[in-house]
Amino acid sequence: MPTPSSLNGFYASSVAINTDKKWIVAIIAGDILVSSSSNYKGPVIDSDCTDLLKFFCERRITLGQWHGRDCEVWELLPEAATTEGFTLVELRALLMAADDEDFSLACRAVQLLDWQDKHRFCGSCGELNAVSDSEHALACEACKISNYPRISPCIIVLVTRGDQCLLARNPSWPANRFSALAGFLEAGETAEQALHREVFEEVGVEINNIRYFGSQSWPYPGQLMLGFIADAVTDEITIDGVEIAEADWFRYDNLPGIIAPPTIMSGRLLQQYIDEARLAFG
Ligand SMILES: [Zn+2]
Image (cartoon, rainbow, N blue to C red; front, top):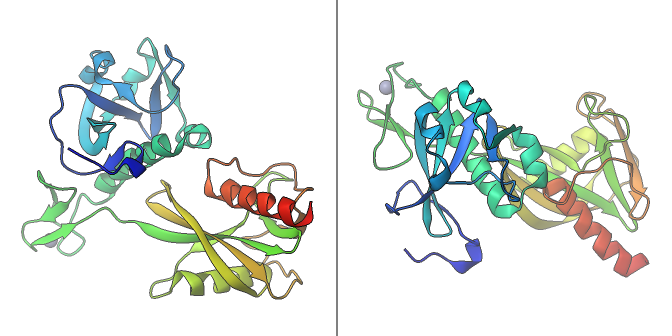
């Protein structure tokens, strides 16, 4: 099946194309089982290496295709964690180091399992939902309602002021760990409205000149992070004291000790800003 080359091999679909060999993403209670015998430390296992794992498989869902082969997530029993040649890795640790396609596959695998777990019953009549054979849907026969994987959009924004950017610390984070501001969209709100509201609520700053940067799936659970860079119109910071424990302006070449890696959206926004600021102010 031809797929756009710009997708770099990742093709999200609920339909298998029945390839001889498959790729498997193996999950045990939300953690990812990865091969410990190869240099590749991503989430994908060749189906040639899964003979031992299939005895522990409780559920499989088609994820689509990865580099032309069908790809499935397998949910395994906890006993599979000690299988020789494999190591169990926390999802968050894997995401921090993963490339784009591995990141997408791991997010999709975890999200689909989580979605099925949390939608076993019809929200309208309370009867058991049935898993559709033809698409990723959970259907209630009595109500004729199909439920599809739920994706929750959220925004993350790096607010900048010339050679400085605004970073904040969540109360639960260690000292010196800072990030761009983020929050969920309210029902009925546009992404732009959410940006103005979240930044003002969290740090009391007004913004303009909002530039869309990119998006990233984030499986805690089913979030879609929409990344932006914006200019500050006001610069006095008033933290809300609830979601934000500390916030400040930081010069692009003097950022705090712990910031996100470039694999995740917060880190990507910062890298983009640093590159632009070096050209403008370096
Ligand atoms: Zn129902």
